[in-house]
Image (cartoon, rainbow, N blue to C red; front, side, top):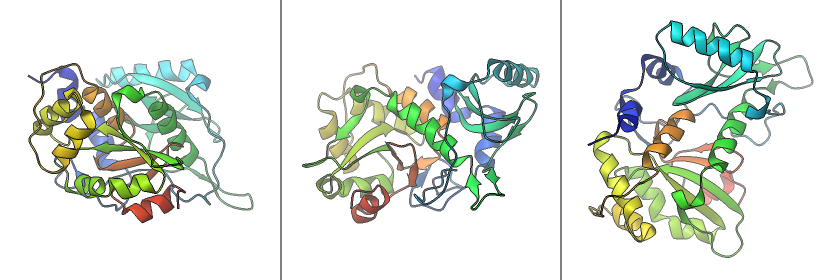
Length: 279
């Protein structure tokens, strides 16, 4: 039987459904958990040349804005929990992190929800004040995940880069990525898998992988189409699903760098190495 947490991820509230549908979508090779959307999405600007403002962290959160926004959401029958509201370089605008929702902007009164990029002009070059905030949110959240809760494929030789990949046993593009794991690791890239089952039916398969005595071997078998079996145990699958929802993941694989930038979906090993600076 599925837990309430798992059901909530798939059913989602009306606010999360609306926000997920309105997110900026970037074309990338990936498997979607929505038949109408076969792409991953991210509002991260992936170019290393993009100038961004210095990102603040949840420690800079304004409790009054959190309180106001939470009250307004509750008044509208929305129960998502607001984690933080961090001031941005745009006066009166805050970057909001909430449980089970992609991050978004709000105003001082907490009356408005704003999605998308905010770009400041007037200097020598445009400044994307949202990109650093998006990446900082992901970096902070991914760094907090215990390594023991992930399935890790370490780099061969010197580790040049670490990536986090939300994955699903039944996703074709996830399997393509996994087929290149030896090449990826040989290029100095460590891959840390988190669970992102795209449907309720995939949840038991992912839980069986995480409950296996040898998780890496179980993952290898699952990626080849095997039906992995294992005794029931406590797993982080539901927590990974909630984290993915918070980071705006909609498809698999969803690959993030240690710095919190999402580099897209499936990329061949050579392109992945170039994207994460390991070439």
